[in-house]
Length: 256
Image (cartoon, rainbow, N blue to C red; front, side, top):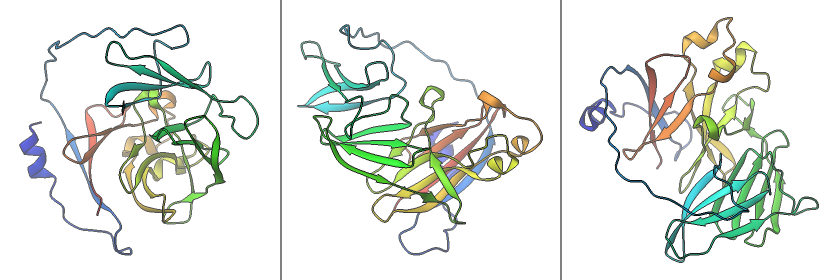
């Protein structure tokens, strides 16, 4: 679909009735029939060392001393691997402790480098947020219970290998969540899959990503359960549900 058509469709029509400075969104459902052709543009080879992995399920791109790096969470060595995208720069590794207060769980749910002295990890079942510095030492650790507008407890979790990532904006976080710990309960599919969380105010300011009706029956979709979240340059979030062929939700999120 052309960008101009998206811009024409995504017209803001209302807002929530909550307190000021909350976000609001509009959900639209479309069926796309237009095909696109991908054209090969460039191949780049990145050399790694023996401590690095050829694949990271959780990674981000940063600039370090004005040089681009891929930062990958290494679940085997429990480290952050800093791999330069420019030839001549050195690979670096931040290896976390395996026990004690500075320990990081290899099976953690979310890790994000806001800066090299502000590395945040989230454990959904432990409800534990940790902040570590560039030496891997713990700066802060606290339990965090996140609840939706109805007071229901939500559990932040990311399935990066399925394309479901949190999105960290300037003032809020867009977090994928477990709407319920039992994924086979019908109630799981009657709640929104993504929340907009204000970490300063410690509150959920909006939700989006409702499951399509086909998920709300008696079938259990297993690996086809989790939707994909994709931010776009237009400020929209594309949510696709793998079991729902040809349909996707376009969520227009406005952050004051």
